[in-house]
Length: 266
Image (tube, rainbow, N blue to C red; front, top):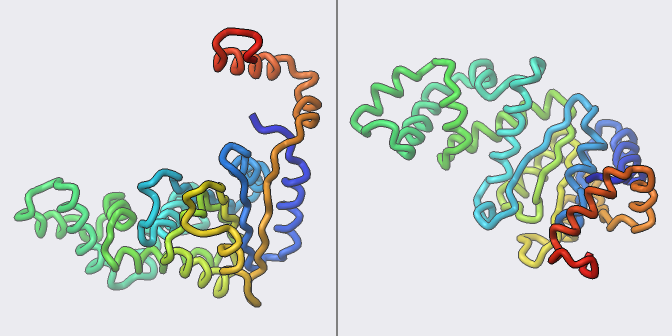
């Protein structure tokens, strides 16, 4: 349940308006469950170019080179599929990449072989059939490939989009950002106009300290800041719930179900 946060929402919206389409990086930090993602959604969901980059918090998302870059590219491509003004990765291929057929052949061959769709002896024939086709398989191959050409394509695609459109990007679990993505995002903020929020979940096993992250992006070209999302005051919650019996009932039911059924434990 998301309660109030009007002050924080107004702060983010005012900051976005005041930045006047300049480069901005915000570290938004709090422990898990404080509502960082929902707060950002409430603040920016009505904006035309608001993109959420989903990165899982679990261990398998740590120490993966270029992970946050790939997920940004994937999120931009997904957003573009519902926004006719922004090209998808496939459209970007056709319009700007003359050498894409050669690159995509290598990446797609690797993708097929890795996923064991067909015997390796038939790879050449399948790739020739896919060349120039409008297939989602090529896009999937690019985003899942570890090939250096895939990384190059994704970086070019991201820069192309952000060079043409002023976009609000919020990145989940930025506390686990890999070093390659860190360098790339700094370059993006220096060379393009983009508004980036990093949702930082405080825990004991983060890969980068929140203040180190903030200082890394703070320079003459980037306006960087750090914002703490604090625990909601109890009286504010009570005030919000006062005339909402359904909410009070849901809270009591949840508390009861988590207890042993003993009222003293509620």
